[in-house]
Image (cartoon, rainbow, N blue to C red; front, side, top):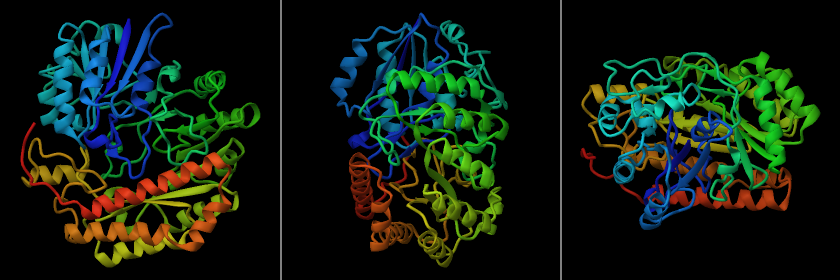
Length: 471
C-alpha cells in the first residue's frame, strides 16, 4: 500500500492549518505540521509507503500543485480541507478527486463537524476521517467508509460519537515525511522540529472550542518513548507536543517525563491547561526539557467563562504563570475577545491582565463561529449562517455573526490595540532578549514578531466580504 497525504495550496499563500478538530490561520509566519496526517501514518505497516504533497507548506501555485498530483500513483488518498478557506479547498478537492476517480479517497477537516458539509462531501468521496488512531487502512482500500472505525460515510443517518475515550494503538509516525522547511513552530528554539502527540482529543468541555467534541485517546508512554528514540536517529532536537492539554492523564505522563529527563536532551513546548497545573508536574516538565507553555487564559473574568463550561480559578492561573517564570520557562497566554457576555470594559480588563502577568507571548483571538462550537450552532439556528458562507476564524477576516455585543470594527480595533500594547513595551522587549537562547532562536523570534505585525496590519485594513452562500 502507498498512502498519499494532500494539503492544498492556500489562497494568497495564507498559513492555513487544517486539522480534524479545528482549523485556523496562523497569527504570524508559522505553520504547524499536519499532526493528523502524522498520526495516520503511524498505522502503516513496515512494507507500506507514504508520500506528502503540501501546497501550503511548499507555497505551491496551482499548476505546480497539480503537476505533483499528476505525477503520483497512490493506492489510498487522504485530503485535508478547512472551513477557513472552504471555497478554495473544495475546488482543489474536486479537481484532485477527478484525477483519482479509480482510487479510494478520504478527507479530513474541521468543517465536517457540520452535518450539511459532511452530507455534501461524502457524496463525492469514500468517507470522512474523524479519528486518526483507530482506522482500518486495509478496510479503507475497499472504497467504502461504511461501518469502518474512525470514518463517517453517507450510509450513516445520524452522527456517531466522534471518538470514544480509550487507549490509542502504538505505531510510530513517519516523521521523515514532515521535516519540511515550510513548517515553522513560533515558540521553538530551533527551526527544525517535530510534533509529538501523547493524547488526541481533549478532556475538557469548553463549548466555544471544537476540541470539546473529541474525547481523549491516550498513547501509552512506552510508545512515545520509542518515537523519541526514532526522532533522535533523525537528528531532531526540538519538539512540539501537540496535545490539547499536555499532562493528561497524569499516570501516563509522569513516567514519560522521567524517561525524558534521564535519557533524552530535547527542548520542547506544549499546550498546558491551568487545571492540569501542580508544582510537581511543572517541575517534572522543566527537568524533561520543556521551555515554553501555551496556556489558555481566555479572559480576566474567569467566573464569566463558567457559562461555556470552562472552570478555571484566576488565582491558579497567576500561580501557574508565576511559577513557570521562576523556573525560567516562557509562557504564551491565549486570550479570547468578543465572547457573547462581555462588555468592552471587560475586554479591556482582559488585555490589561495580559500585561500584568509575567507572560512572554500573548495570542489575542476574536470569538468566532468555529465548526462544532456552540457559537456556530446558535448562528445556524438563527439563520445568520448559511451553507458555503465560511472563512470565519479568530483573525476575523470575515465579519462576526453577532457573538459580541461590541461592533465588528470596534472589536477588531480592540484586538489590534491589545497586540500593540502587549508587544511594544520596552520592558517586554528586554524580557525577551534575556530569554533568547541563541542566535537561531533570536532570528526565529524576530521573524514571528514581524509576521504578527503584518497580520495585524492586514486585519486593520481589510473589510469583511458580503455574507453569501457558495461552494
